[in-house]
Length: 635
Image (cartoon, rainbow, N blue to C red; front, side, top):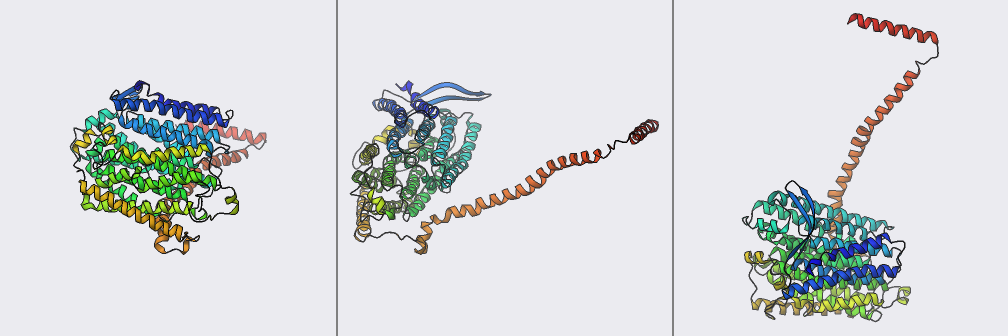
């Protein structure tokens, strides 16, 4: 079956072609079936291959479809690498992607661009599968650019709204900045190793000394690409604005697929990063700073999707911290659980927005518990999971990362990350209680239309809620089990890095302490949030300008966007205008226009010679003959 793995990306591509070409002819129901069915088919194939790896029947295999580029010493085949890491990513992409497709059938049922939307979704899934299945960096880059294009199309799907178009352009441009670093990294990889194939590059890298400057530069360039795609400081501001797209897009981009591409790329390149400890330290601190800053911003946001967006940025920071300390399997573990509970939370938010007739401000919600019982329960489970409440998925993966940070840099990393975890619980329970408890704060018309979402929306919520509840058991700590399923499954991928790693496993005492303290702190946060948002019914003020200065600073996202506008966008626009006025208009246009003016002037001047007098013509002819004779005589 593993030899048929090429069907996994092919099926969504076929779905895209059918939907794209038949956009004007297909019914909505048929479009939904085709789009969802192709992704489901990919998921089924992926499951059979995954089970083969578990049983030991399958081994890492490269499927060479055809020789693509042969130029001099450059040989690049269009081939797929089927191994434990790629199949884990494929399962997440197709599994969660299928649920989002089913959800979209109900959520987008009244949209006039229904078929076009599903065509974009299928193309997105195809691009993401290409990214994770490619056996070399060039194939990865094709998928990398593909998901960037699809994110632009999906974020700006409602293109009649100019703000949405601006958000799509912002995402596209900021990703191009990171992609330039990634592309330069690929060039340097080829110059250094003479190949871009993973197997040859990683084998060649093992001959380099740890900390070699070339490997440091390569990994830094690749990390720039990861910062753009996975929204890390300073290239993170596009992701919250990407909320302009339909909610299923937010779930697809921010949960299971696009934003995790950077995590996957570094995990895939673990050999290079393990041999570049300087880069690992930079990855660690960028992730830590991003996790903390994004968590603080999420505290005071009032748009339900914006809170989840900043939560995504923060959780991605967690994963980069894990990568920075060499915990590659831990990063992939949190990536997996995050796909479950963040997709659940985004889709749950979409169900709320659907019931509220498009309203996204949590200050105008409240009391939705009795109107949306399924959404309420599933959103609660997602909140418990992301907050790290045992035994939900986030508890195991987040605590594993926290345990890894004990020791490095005098425990500063552990303290900051633990505080960030506390902030996560605070803003998530704030959103939960303001949305579903207390009294309804919307309009009477909204209240009249409140209802639970259809089955196409609630069934994916229930499935994701189950995964968010039990997903953590993929990797239980040593004090609970000797077998860490995900770590053992991915062991062949990270074998070299694990051997080179100097990280020490935390003691049983440390693990017990983390768990006990986490449970106590989470209990206090829940009690505080219930008292504030249910008992006291405290609601954020409508006029955010009257809030204290620090809170206002955080609410306005530290004015980072404004800073970028001032130091980057405004100067570029100024230089653009100067170049336009001086170089373009005065010099280039002036030169071209002067030629035209010279021809016109010459024509008007010569026209005066044509007087129509025969005597004048004879005179000019005789004068011309005399001039020619004189010229020849002088010569």
